[in-house]
View 1 (tube, rainbow, N blue to C red):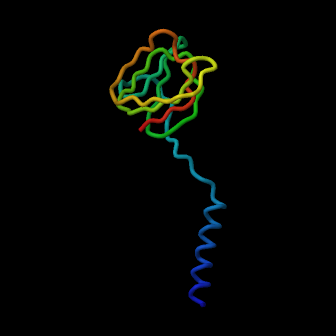
View 2 (view 1 turned 90 degrees about the vertical axis):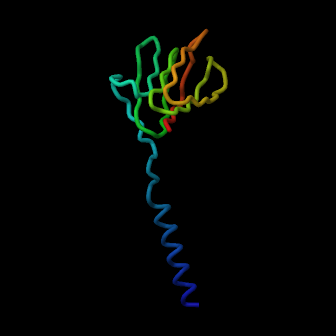
View 3 (view 1 turned 90 degrees about the horizontal axis):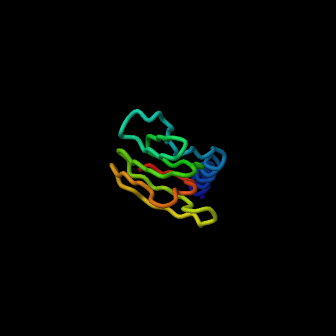
Length: 113
C-alpha cells in the first residue's frame, strides 16, 4: 500500500508540474531578408517576404501572387478569395509557383517542414 501511495504521489506531482509549466512554442520560423535562394519567398504587390527555419507561424499576408519554396517543404493555409473558406496546400522543396488569375487573398498560416 505504501508503494502504491508513493507512486501515486509521483504521478500527481508530475501532472501538477505539467499543468503549471507553460507549453513552449514549437515555432522557430524566422522572417529573414531575401538574400538567399534557400528561403521560402512569398511575393505580393508590396514586394517579397522571406522565411527560414522549420516550424509553424500564424500570419496575415495578402495578395500573394508568387511562391518560391527554396530548400523547404511548405504547407500554407489560405483563403483563395475574399469570403472563401480557408484551405491548405503543401508544396515540395525547390518549387516555384505563379498564381494565375487573382492572387491568393490571404495566407493565414505557414508551416515549414
